[in-house]
Image 1 (cartoon, rainbow, N blue to C red):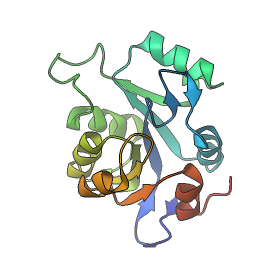
Image 2: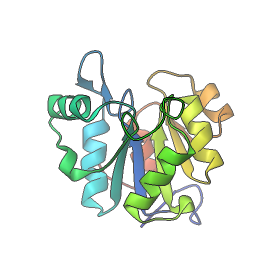
Image 3: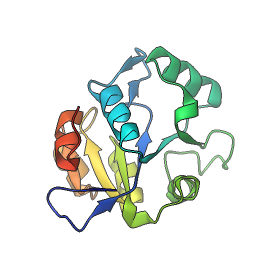
Image 4: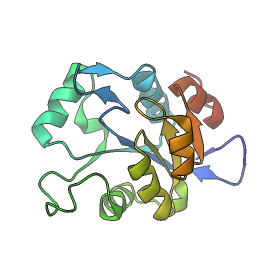
Length: 165
C-alpha cells in the first residue's frame, strides 16, 4: 500500500491506467516519457495494475509490444468487444468497475491515471482517486474534471507516491 504524500490518509493498493496517450502514443507507438519506468516501479511495489482501453486486443498487444511490455503483467479491461456501441465511447463507470473487480480493491484504494477529462470525471464519480497526466490536455481541464493530482511527467507522480524511479 502506498500513501499520497499530500494526505497520508489516501491509501493506494492498485493503479489503473488508460493505455492510449497515458502509457503509449498510438500514432507513433512510442512510450509516454517516464511511463515504462513508472509501471516497473509500481510493479516492484507489488501493487495491482490494470490497463483500461477501448482498443481491440490485437491493437493492445501491438502497442505493448512496441514499448517492450507484455499484457501478462496487467489486468486488462478493453471495451471494444465487451460493451455496447454506446458504452464503447470512452471509459465509463462499467469499465472502471471492471478494473476494480479484476484488481480486487475498493474504489477509494485505486489510483486511476488518465489524460482525458471525460475519463477523469467518470473515474472520480465512481469514487476513485484520479491522477491526470498532461499528455494531451491542460492541467486546468484535468483539475476541473476532478483529478486529485495533476502531473506533467511520471516523475512528479512517482514523487507524490514516494516511488523511486
